[in-house]
Image (cartoon, rainbow, N blue to C red; front, side):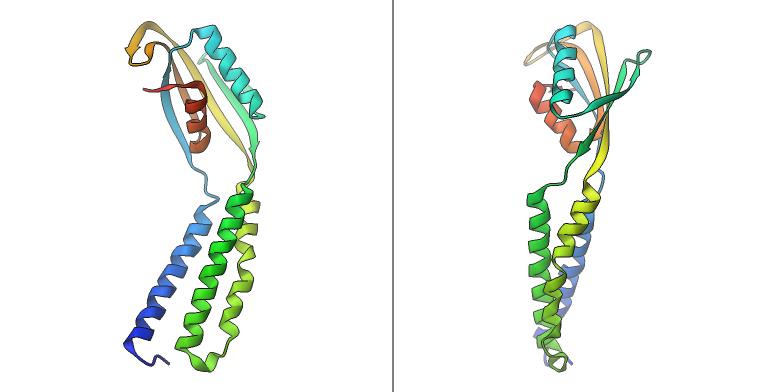
Length: 181
């Protein structure tokens, strides 16, 4: 089966890389929910308007408003990325080609059929596309500080607690120029 140590070593490393690629593709559609706190320098009315405009522009709708705890839950559909679907398919194609080539060279009696592993590459993009497009929620709590906190960017008058997908949380921080708490 294996002619020499180099062929055996190449086969083992390629198999391990293929397993890693499989788990990378599987993790591409995983939820990454986190909770972050930020400080805001805008006055309360302006801050609430900015938050409302931000989520409306991103097609989020208010689904729950808890006035006692000053929490608002937004919901919106997060579309999958065409670029990432293509990239995952390309990576799966290259991985399938490499694995097929190593199997063909390691086990000559198998012929060239292992190169057919390239044909399943589009399934990686389809998997990502079907599992990553979903409705997500962002829970937002605005707390107006009784005493302003001095920061490098000015006086912070409010604290915002956001729970949502990590990309959405980071996008909010950048869009509203929020300060890490």
